[in-house]
Length: 335
Image: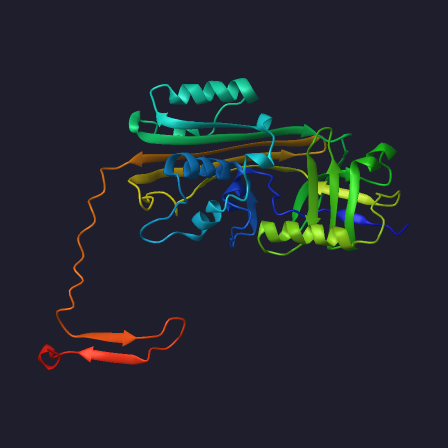
């Protein structure tokens, strides 16, 4: 069988906290960015969905203009239906004296985790202030631990790898499914896990959005006619990945929700990710803080007084052009 050297490319490669500042945390899979290294987790979308459905009771718009990311979030392309309820925790309500303690106890009880985000939130108690919070947690193992392959090059850096070499144990082959192999720079595989999770790795240099890349991968998988079995001559090399990133969504903060007296004070997300030869660990938190401002002033009366020069057009219904136009300047000529 023709030798396939599967050196998996991934834009999430990080090996020290110094790299963290160069990873962009995106609010949706369709979000665009000029940053090469980017990550998306559905956590902030879960928070946004609850804010939209249970606090604002409408799609979110801003009076001075709605950013693209807000319109993307309003589409709710990721919901609770897309992930098991055992893998996330949510909280929504007025901020009270014990709010922080309630959330901290809940995530400790459900995930045995502590928060990376609560200390950064303004949790001043008030009936006029709201918090929407979520934690998404995943921890799973590959069916069989892959081999540690040691250091090798990744672009112009050295990276620690895991995977399968020709000398690896045979049972490792069953942990990999080839989705397609169109060339050494265009291929994808799926790594099997002990549970319900699947890990897809797609080597591609495209900078398009995540939703485009995912759909593109599935199309190539469907069209591929070659063997999808990981063969005896095939090799797999995947870099270890380990990072923590935090994002404050500045475009959202400080804006009033149109048609309401709600102002978004804080909107942020954190992502902690680790993948090595044994499996994957993921922890992500997101939160929004909103407050009720003073009641909006009543709209000012508008006076549609045609008491100076104006124009009249007459047009038939369903026609595109008027058949009559009149400009009135000297009213004495018309009365």
